[in-house]
Length: 367
Length: 254
Image 1: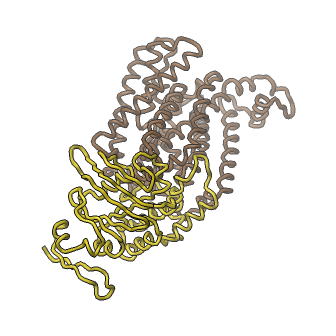
Image 2: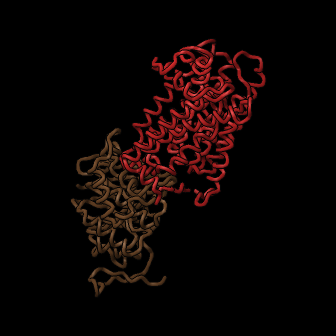
Image 3: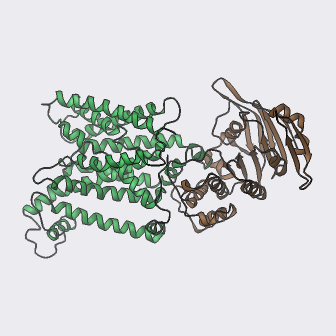
């Protein structure tokens, strides 16, 4: 099974491989992220002029006012932006970055480019854990509800990862087919149970709809939701930034890694725990958003290669930007209707998944 | 740097693959390990370089207790060219070779100009200098093998273990790889298939049969037609090659 690289002979790749080129690319993506935030915050039921949006954000974040203060310091635009749309776009950034990071780390951990929290059923494990946490009500109320929800989701995600990997590893080497099939089974199982819970606990306080859990939504974003997910995602990014050499050796396999001085098995366990934690926190706050962890690392590998020192920062940035724009699409593609964001990511991701499965050089039945 | 293996046994399941093997590679020797398929050569090598945990035995690299030391410590001294080198993900040849610097690097340490120089030099030694930016998965089996050798070279090891390093290679690169490693002037232990090449390049040979060392000695002492009949079950005649004066083996039909 191979992921053909487009780096060979590509001028873009050669440019990104140079140090200056890489940093310029990161800088460009940061600019693009800022632009995306602005556009995303401006668009919606009420369209707000882009200039006004930036002035309001600048004032709210730094206290600095450019031009006319009226309509910036307070007003309906300010309220819409600051209490509804801005937390939502921040959540989109964090979720996009987190899911892409998760996919990338899981792919290295199982040495298979098809790994993704959604495809392997980790996300549905998380949603089962979360719905179960609500059902048994160890959520109590207020702030604790959020943490118990995330904790339940983490336990569910971790359980699902262990199950999938055990199932896929039965009878020797973990093949793509076994991995994908195990993911499918666990996905179906967890989904059935969590839908069962949602269906019967219909009236219970705090439980959300099947749509929310299976197709995801960023609509519930509030400021109070952000601290937990930001801490987890930011810490995870920083942690994996210092693990890039180990992630690289994971891609060359266990044997080669040992001869290069790294025993992967302990790292692998820890990384699975970390990805379960990220997935759990993300699913608890916005449901299951599929395929992001599959699409983004795959595309970025085509641009910058497999070396995680370049792959990780670019994956995280592009993942964040990608989710901001899919959220914009979800909100605006059908007038006055908000689509679940998971529909959009699946429409983009599933065909890519199909392509990856049938692509030449992918010994689908083999190794 | 000397390699000493004492009393090493490996079992997989209830099956003893390697039994009480002792061998020694003295300073800067090139020692070959020969034997038929399934005689336990690879398993023996893998247990020396810490992939397989032996049932008992000890491995010392000069003063270093290999089996009780961390992979990181061992990998600073010991380079390995293994057999299976397929990737699911793609790297450029230069990136693959740069991984050879991993044992010498802290977690946050960047690659310095010196590391890039070492990588270039390693690629040059295996004649793949111009392949630095090529994708590893697009290379032929022989080219891949040379990249892996370059990676081991970039480790700057004091001792190297090679598991059938000349597999997949045409004769030019078989000779070239053996020549390169011999010129490194470090201790070498290599499993080899080709007996005439083993005789030509090795200073000393260990012959394995059914998981045990069957014979050992200098190539011209140990390679006899009786031994080859016993170990490989092939009739042959040993002669001096009139052109090269190397040891030659003429195999007969069974």
